Image 1 (tube, one colour):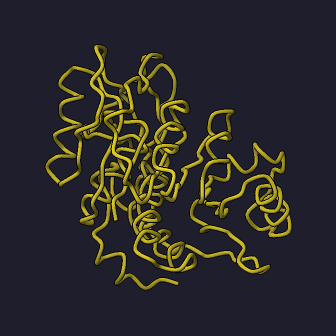
Image 2: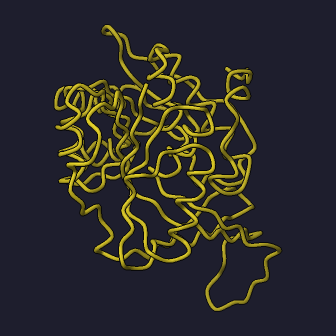
Length: 298
């Protein structure tokens, strides 16, 4: 199966802090963790590590950060032939990792012109699956139209007009709870399944694809043959949640493209995302394929 990941890349600079910084104070940290990141980039990296035939199309800058992003992907077998190198600095994300509770705060420096801009004439038309992170609507739409037979999976993280439009073109809408709440105006709580069901039904009515709502460490939610399913996650000690959602979407794409059932795909993607939060950084925390299959926590 040929898989395309299309969307954003960034260079992550992670600062692990013993507590969340307070204003007007000085802090010392033991290390700084650098690696490439970004939603499409992280998902492609997982698929490359798991030996998929995967291509990444993403814009990067013409600086050392951009070259490092491309080289990291090449080194694990990801096809980077269609990456766009733009004459501007690569997007950088400065991540404050609060070691006290595992949360992360991300401050991103991104040029507003950092978008896919090229001609799609040279982009292949034989991809079997396309994973989009909802960015670069016009370019992504053209690629989807060119690969009209491909199954499209969208990582619908933020609720905005372009992501919503791409949801309408997708076969699998794997959306965050933030997207689901923002689109439906239902501010559900994780322990109120009736509210989650109402939210799901609105999404299911408006989009043609299969709906999956991710619920952070509570798992993920869907409906199959008139039956609602809350697929729980596993319990782990949280160190850093950076990239967990990207890893979930990369794993979801892998398992769906390898003919796993939807429920099995959700279960294993939950495990992949959960295992990732036990380590600092996004690339560093991607679990091995066998580790995901052999983890029993449900």
